[in-house]
Image 1 (cartoon, rainbow, N blue to C red):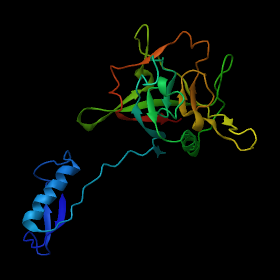
Image 2 (cartoon, rainbow, N blue to C red; image 1 turned 90 degrees about the vertical axis):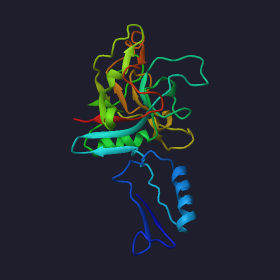
Image 3 (spheres, helix red, strand yellow; image 1 turned 90 degrees about the horizontal axis):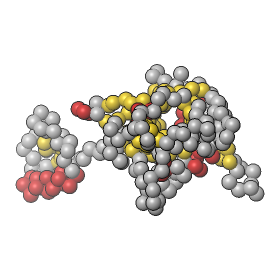
Image 4 (cartoon, rainbow, N blue to C red; image 1 turned 135 degrees about the vertical axis):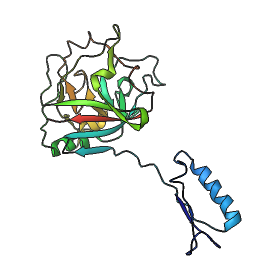
Length: 256
């Protein structure tokens, strides 16, 4: 509905001009420019009016649902090739801050804008305890097991929930990744300035949220895969199930 004040309004006793579209047509697709142009036309016949344009509400960066035991993060489908790189690298992380902030933005499924440390705190607020991240050969991730999904836009405005493994395929065989064990490891801390005692949550620096292989311990989640698996498993995104690059999606962490 568009509501305005008329100088000589005859549509209501208090001079309020109402253009009610709720029962006649859906104007949700109209642009702000169109509404402003419409206001100008009405002005010529009815005098000054005030037009209120409804804004699309952005998705919350992090949403907690303690009843469903989920932490949901607003994301976008990531580009598979960055303009400053000459090749497309295999997927090694699931979620990263976008380039240039994200160190793994060239090999991720989705990008997000929230702070990894805030996502860590969100899980802890639900009673989930972090463990210890793995890094390099002979190291294994430890911590609470979680499940990870992608919520994708579907037909008719409905949401389709996809296990994150379904978003990954083997580069050689094109087979979908089998179920993996996802672990809330938490990130190591880092001392940016060796001359100062302050440390920070290292995943906030790397921008990595979920790593498939233990190539970094500056991440919040890892799988149970080790560096022995990394040369054997080369992953790509599954274009058959994922929407186009830049599409708004949601990453859902299901806790025990």
